[in-house]
Length: 193
Image (cartoon, rainbow, N blue to C red; front, side):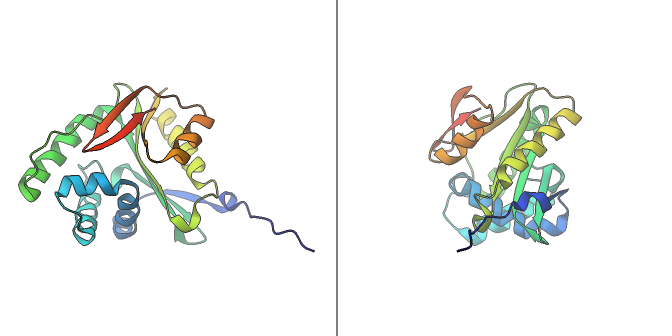
């Protein structure tokens, strides 16, 4: 009998800076990672509207979810995930721009909790297409984020992990991330690592 070996796809994984043409695929992946938070922003569970909102945000240059802060992993010509990461010094300004947009377009009345710590390179979003999970693509994106952080002279990376996603937390802890503090975004609990 032949053994069925799982190929190491990351050997052919290419991670590229996002372009505007990646907006639709990226919006789907971002929503998959942040569905509850995005619905909190919009005030309703409306997937088509959430995708439109995320697509619009992706296309902006001054947005937390901008293509300017996004890296796209491509495997065999397919977009298999998304990484959004940036210098934490940009976070407060970009978050205020988002809050203003939400107030104007979605009657948003809540405050937004700061997600980052001063001086860190912040990994805002990592999302992997469900069909490609378990193939070390998330680990490769984290390694890529570390390279981006070093290139920008950062010695610390921060990220949030959803308390309802123990697999992600195990991945982060396995590679050395440690819990800094609990944090709530919207009505949901996370830990800052």
